[in-house]
Length: 383
Image 1 (cartoon, rainbow, N blue to C red):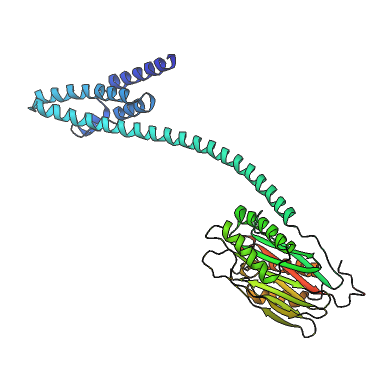
Image 2: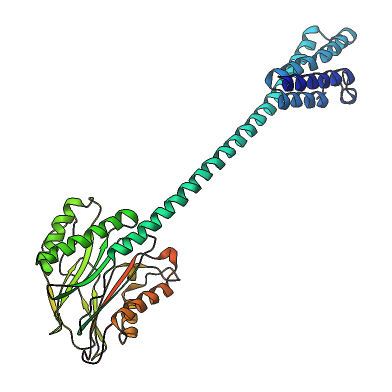
């Protein structure tokens, strides 16, 4: 209250000083009363609007036109003007004062509101920053958990070596890669759940256990696809689906039976001829509500040193430094360049080659699995 009274007394003193000293301003004398703008009165009114508010500048405006009306009335008596003209001049000047004060007041209020909004936005940004910090920690922890859950232990045989390398575009991803031995059957699998992030990551974890359950129940290739599709159709949203490349290898004979459910073509590198064969899809997508059903398996014979490379579409759909898709030719070249390596080293080298050719912002999730027939199992140890 004391502060308001002090501010009001200062304003009143200022207004009266202006009114008394500049009742007939120098500008009025130069331009004539008819053209006067009364700049000093406008300054007082603006000060009132900024300092105290609407009531103060209205009072200031009324006080400011009092000497003007007196001057106009005196002129009317001496020059023959009418009282109505003097009143009109006074009313016009009052309107100008009120308009100027209102403009200043609204500018002040707008500035005050802008400052309040800026303070509020700062607080909101601080809250969001803290929330994102917590979320980043949670997502990072979820990524570590996903990597731990999906980790496929290396179970090599003396004749078949399998290497896996997965690189997500973010902390979580929708790629799934697995390998193992169940009932003396050596298998490997690559799958890609449509989409990215947390939802896709949850489905990859589920997919792993659906696959392991099917294997434990003795299902193979095409029957595995039937089982996975039936389960996925019940739980996946309508806009989700899964592509899968599953292969079983007979370590004694090198015979590989595979299933390609809408997945990118696998690449079989022949060591003897340095040629690459493509393993095309053998059936539709999995878990797609509008897709047809029915999957077939296919067989291929692998010889010593041959390596089968299967991968998710991130390996071909990621963008290079020029913004172009890497394409299948890049994977073919990387396969040929690193076919002499062990399976794990080859998978790591292929992914490293992809990363070197792309920028992080233009990458998708990438998974590569290399299945290699050991050339001389009595000498070479895939470990």
